[in-house]
Image (cartoon, rainbow, N blue to C red):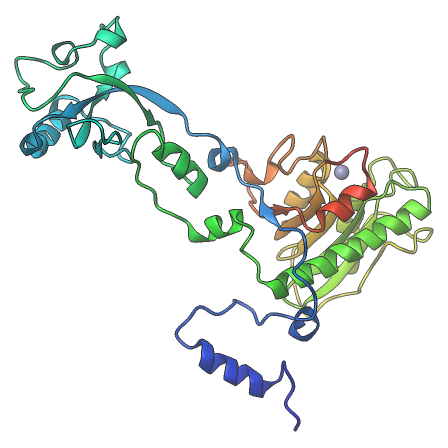
Length: 359
Ligand SMILES: [Zn+2]
């Protein structure tokens, strides 16, 4: 048998070469064709929760130079007793002095401003006004000064970098999130596949536009079988004002499973691929990926949530978008289904479809 690039011979050679290193979760699809393609000029970025993407909230605090380094261990121990910092375990008590021009090498966090409500003149605070003189030996400490510390532990590397610029902070990094934020989560082969799926959604959008509809397209993909299970375009001007491309796409998936509510006879560009693997029982979109050219609205986002979508990839943002622009429906703690959303796949092409409503 003639070995091919994707055949078993090259696979075993690849396994030997890669032994002991991380390998992709799934074998990268269509390696042969993608190897000839240039790296796509877009990147898929995760749409994270506000808690993961907001600037760190900062608390006012007092710090002081440690003028006698030999006192450091005692000062740390005694300050922890008289001025504990509950809820701030992520904040390091001692930091190196950032200013090389100063004689002291270390600085220590004395207390939060909220610990000393009686101090009125922040700029002129003294150690005796911040600490109980009778039970605390302040020798080794210099004149206190104001500092800022992050109120909560950073969840992402950008948050960690912003927080650490104020005061040293500990950080338990989720490497997956860091790599996603850099646009490096997906391999070239995976990106080529994603581009192929979004291009199918773009073609559906163009088909719809040719029939007088809004140019929005969507495809539902079964990533395990590597196939498109439903293709849809917007029908709000064709059949019903609520028939947005995503709603149509979900309905087509349901139709493929023996359900569905709409009628598509007049819209040949909308269709489903027929039932999946025989005997397969899945609840509507469980485990499926949706590719949609424009960020979905709240109604479509809720429909995706109720149909248990696996992941959503969209091209361009929309002013009323529910996956990052106006809301982040997929990150709501109170909702009973969570899923990942990525934006930016074929962003420019998707944006050009609806320049007036997308950004
Ligand atoms: Zn919608």
